Every structure is written in C-alpha cells, then in structure tokens.
Image 1 (spheres, one colour):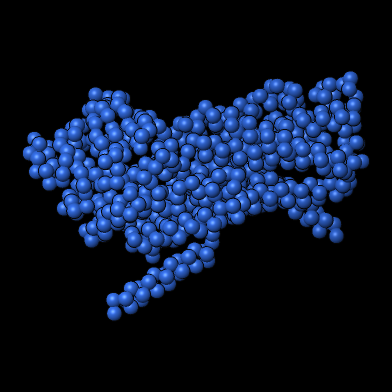
Image 2 (cartoon, rainbow over the protein chains, first blue to last red):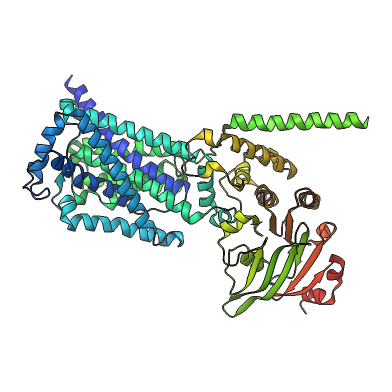
Length: 365
Length: 252
C-alpha cells in the first residue's frame, strides 16, 4: 500500500508538471510551429501570469473581507494570505470564482504584455523580432525582481489557495483542474489550426511575401497570434503559481520557461500539436524521473545531479537535430473539411464531368 | 476602352542604378497586355512597384480609378489586383489544394473569431474546394492535390503559382513569366485558359513573357522595355519588328 500511494503522488505531480508545460509548449507551437514567429521570450507571458497571481487575488479577497486593513499586503504577506486562505477554505464557491477570475485577469495581462513585446519589432525581419522578444522576456524578470509591490522581489509572496477546501485532496483537485484546462487549450488550438485560419498561418510561415500578395495582412495576423499565445502562456503561468502556492520572481527564468518549451516543440515536432504532446510527455518524464531518483543517482555520477537533466535534454536535442530535424512526429497536412469530404467533392466533380461527356457525345451522334 | 491600370512617371532607383526611369503605361480593361524586354530592363521591378512590394521614388499608380501608390500589398489585393512571381514561390509545406485555397477571396474562416467555429465557414470552404478543383483540373494538377507543394516539379510549381492567381478572383492579374519552365503544350493550354478568363469573366492581364512564339496568338497589346524605359508599344507584330526592340535584345 505504501508504495502504491507514493506512486500515486508521483503520477499526480507528473500530471501537473506535464499539463502546465503542455499549455506553454502548445502556445509556442502556435507561434513558432504554425506561424513561424521565433518567440524567444516565452517567459514573458508565463511570468506575467504568475505575477498576476502573486499580486491580484490576495489583495482582492483581503479588501473584500477587510482582512487586517492596517497591514501592508507585501510586507505582511504571510499573515494576510494565511487569513485569506482560512476564508477561502470555508467557501468553495468563492474559491473557484476567484480562481477563474484570476485566470481571466492573467490572460488579459498576458494579452497586454504580448502586444507590448511585439509592437516595436513586428514589422522587422524574424531575427530582429526574436531579439526584441528575448529582451522583453528578460525585462519582466528584472522588473519582478526589483519592483517589490508585485511579488516582493527576491523574497517572493504566498498566494491564496483556491483549493484549500479540498483538504487532503488539495493536490488532486489542482491536478484535475490543470489537466482539464490543458485539455481545453489543446482542443481550442487544434480547432484553430484545422481551420482556414490555420492554413493561412502556415502559408505566412512558408512564404511571407506571397501571403502578402494574396491579401493577408501579415503584420496584423502575426500580432494577433502573439497576443493569443501570450494569453495562453499567461494562463499557464497563473496555474503554475496556484499549484506552487507562492510566487518568487527568480523561478520565472528564461531557461525553464523559454528554452525548455523550445526543446519540447523541436523534440516533439513543430507544426504538429500531437507531436508537442509527445514531446512534453518525454520531457516531463525525463525531468520528473531524474527529480524523483535524485538521491539514488547521486553516488553513481561524477557531478552534481542537478546538471543531469540539462545534459540529457541537450543530448536529446542534438540527436533530434541530427536524425529527425522535423521532430518525432512530423507536420502533416490538416485538411479543414477532412479527406473524406474533399474526396466526395472530387468524385462528384468527376462523375458530373463524365455525364457531361456522354451528353455531348449523344448530341453529336 | 477604359484603363484598368495607369502608371505615370514611375521611377525607382537602387543606389546609383535607375531601374525604372519615368515609366508611363496604360493597361486597358479586359485585354491581355504583354510586357517584353531583355534581362535587367526593369520588368519585374515595375511589377514590384505596382503591387506594393517596392515603394517607388517618384510617380503615380492608378488602379481601377484609385491611386494605389505606396499601398501595402494586401490592400492592393483587396482592390482586385493580384500578381504572380517569376521564381515560383509555393507555400512549401501546404498541399497543392491548400495553396489554391489560401488565395480564396474573403474567406470567413480566416478570422480569429470565426475560425474555431466550423459551422460558420464550412459552406464557404466547400465552395472554395469545389472551385479549386475546377482550376486544378484545368491546370492538370488535380491528381496532385494532396501532395505538399515542395514535391512538385518546377513546371508544376509554376502552374500552382498561376492557379493561385486565378483562384483569387482578381479583376486584374500581373503574371511574371507564367510559361517559363512549362512544356509547350501546357503553356498553350494555360494561355488558352487565360484568354477564356479574359473573354468570359472580363479579367485584365499584364503578362511578362519571353517565349513570344507561344503567346503571340493570345495577346492584344505589347509594351517593350529597355534600360528602365518603355521603348516601343502597340500591336504585337508592329512592336516585335521595331528596330529599337530588336536592338535592345541584341544588346546594342
């Protein structure tokens, strides 16, 4: 029994980790895989969402219920959030409302950040856009670190727990909600890319100039794509902060939230959402297994275990680039109305053409 | 006859090189006009300036009664002026069918709000697919419809290029060497079809072409360019016999 319980905890933690990274990687895939936008500042949206959770819901509840109004939210964060959590634990409805409200606000913040980040360089060539986005991703961490009213800089803040009412099943509830949201994001993005819009995005990626000549307002479409991806990324950041129960600016770093999502997309297959699911699964498995067996692995390797996952991911990336540069699952055509319907249209055309032929030959005879 | 496209005193410089030198020309509505001239005479630069890919240094472009100088390409497309490219530029990873569908005008499914709701664009998409197959049959590409465009031969890519322009439902199409790389019979068929479009749909064409023997029967008017200027214009036979044109081709 003891072992199976531990295994369940492993599965639960794995599911949460997998789901959050899946959301971020899918949003990056929309930008890079489908539209060809090299977003090297994915961390911007994720951090924006997480910082929103640090700054927004606690203040709202404290203000609504007048929790120690004489104290400062940032300075006396632990005291206030502890009180807020007591209120939330007794009121599941309020908890869930504040959870979804925060996600919406985080999404809005993400949208604004997405717009700001791409506005200066959206008209420039890809490499300049990439540099600008990278810089924007760095900027938010510097701001979070130095401007204390957001998440108390390098000390961090506690965030209200909207799942306190679940008691010992708190983490199970978190896992379910996050998995549900990641599934919703997956389904939404699959619908988006299997539409004429998805086709247009891939067309822009393949050849920007021709897309312009066929009436596509490439600048505007790219901007909208970045904004949608930023909204999704911010939601992932918010979920990560809720899961952790606290936000500290240093944990939203380019390595974890820009480079790793890039590794996932390249590993799984850019321009293929199923590939990204596979990529996230491999990545999450590697990370969690190494994390879980850290203690056992330590004596067998001649360096600190914390470097092991970076090393393995680096090697994986090199191998993928050498032998399967398009990723584990390649991009496939995604017909909007399905192969079956297209074939029906094709057959209908052929049979009508035949009947016309026989008619005209009859006329001649 | 009415003018579809009017270019007045168009000038484009690249550093010290004057690619277009005060060019003026008129393309009349509902006919096929041809633009000839030796390599480097500025034909493609002219197309780029007219369709918004380059900003001219001086001059005015009027299309269908509207001044479109310095407009971005996508707005020029919206007015009904579409171009093709000399070096075929298919959307590599899209299928042949998808390449044509991308050109479909005013597709509701390309909006960010409507795209997730299949029902809002399904009918239009089926209509577009039907239309695309009609053009693919004409271009002899219907058996290739589900191949990625990168698998096509050079000539087939050229046909996709033409197919996209036809699919766009434009009032006027600028074609940059549509027959280069096509075997003669297919090139004839393409021009025959363009003539059909001209006659039945009233589409205006401006075609840059070198393979005169193939196209001569289909064209109504010719402009000849050399060194960034129009050197001759008029009936096809007259222009081709013009000593200035012959001299410019021979490098005089």
